[in-house]
Amino acid sequence: MSRILLLIGHSENRRLLAEWLRARYHVAAPEVGGADQGAALAAPFDLCIVDAGCLHRFEGWARAVRSASQPEFLPFLLLAHRHDVGLATGQIWRTVDELISAPVEKVELHARVEMLLRARNLSVDNLRLLRQVEADLARARSVQEQLLPERPIEVEGFDLAARCLPSREVGGDFYDWQDLGRGAVILTLGDVMGKGMAAALLMATMRATLRAVTRATPQPGPALDAVRLALAPDLERTGSFVTLFHARLDAPERRLAYVDAGHGHGLVLRRNGAAAGIERCARPIGVPAPGRACPERTITFEAGDALVVYSDGLIAPGAPPPTPDELARRLNDAPTAAAMVDRLVADRSGPTPPADDLTVLVLRCTGSDERRSRPGG
Image (cartoon, rainbow, N blue to C red):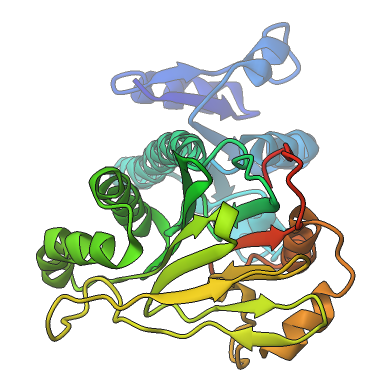
């Protein structure tokens, strides 16, 4: 039952109004200035009906309690004599939501009370749903973060780091790596079309499918052929697609075989400062492609070379993608893979929410056989 607080100075009017309202609502009708006033003002309520004299007396309290209830709607209904209605100013509407003139018509009063209480209940329900959605999204973000690798793999002669920053609570970007043993490592960066929960669901599906396929098919080309065959029909039905950079590193040979399935955001940075983009060699997963073959490309590393792959969250809205030379200048003299990742994601710390998810993966050839162990990037 809704709770109504009456702040009416005239005792007989307060009594009559309280008796009428108690047929439908729980009513608190303290005597203004009486012993029960403090307890009544401190108790929760869903609607306050107040006359002009009490509004003036309790205006500071009314504004404070309305502010404290935000973002819930806490309505105030003002009862005023007809000759006072014309004196109402814009200041009054900072405190009250509806005004009804005395003498009061019961039908009109009931309609105003019901309207305000329904608005109050709707705001309470909406806030409860919002908090439930926020809690669900927080749990979803925690699950998605746990799907990403906890820390880089130790690879002899290489330094590895990555980071994923969703633009919302969850996103469609992901990176992954798998240690196949004997210096063979699978590296993946993917970008699902769209943002938010729908993209996050596809991201989890794509990651799981890639991991399952890679166990049996460690070469990038055949692996993406199998993934395309498995997921393309579902992606086509939903109108979605995923761009992927999927690679296999053979560390002892310092050789990386990769397939770029419509991704196209990456470069090879040589130790002498030269930089070259990564070649797209297949269509995104979910986009119909003639045949199923995903051709592989190869990168050979020397000490000091680095592979940098990123998602389109690195590109400013409306701006062209950075050129390999521009990225090379930003990464100049960065001593580690983690430092390179830090430089590329540094612009995401501003007050404006990012327009898109951002993921960066860096593989740097150290030219050393020392086994490196660094915290996850």
